[in-house]
Image (cartoon, rainbow, N blue to C red; front, top):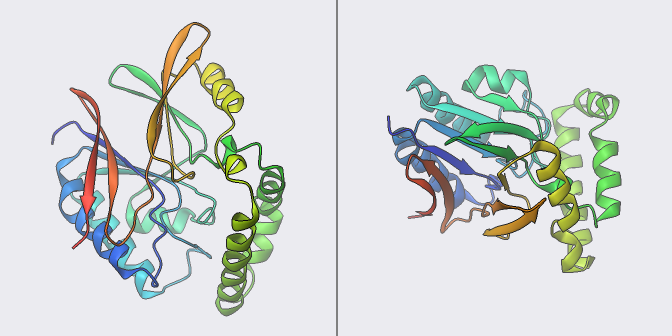
Length: 244
């Protein structure tokens, strides 16, 4: 085992994009097997309507994750804005560990703050209000009490409305707020912040209290491939993950 930790996010797995699913399954069966740990920072699925959803895609992904963890590779998972209903049953089936958002870890001798990233987009006030409402435990419980068919219909409706709302918003409010980023780096005393959500992969330098902190933004995956952020004893780097 190499001592590598791999970071991915925003795969948005859905039956409508089988190429992305194929790419991720190959990644789990090949590249991820050479690492020590895989960390998925949200939006693994384009929609997750409950651990009882036994669709073919969901079963295939859970089987592949279970095979990865059974091979001795650690796998941590954080909720995204599309799959925050992933629960304990999913974790039991796959061997994944669910992380809180945010979570602070120590990696390579430095403190690393892990987030999905949507909490950093505080300029998008309507989204933050909506996020607080749908994450309410009672709202989640009421949704999960509905039938699978009803939940599928509601999720499809939400995706359509979300796409329309996103298209109507100014691009600037869809990105992180710099002050919010710096507040999180300061509060957690983190040397590095790793997150996804914005689909704007890059490495940014932030000066906080006289120290340079790094913010690494993860890439969205597509049928043609994706990207993985790698941390190992040599440092940090990005690797392309290619499709067929």
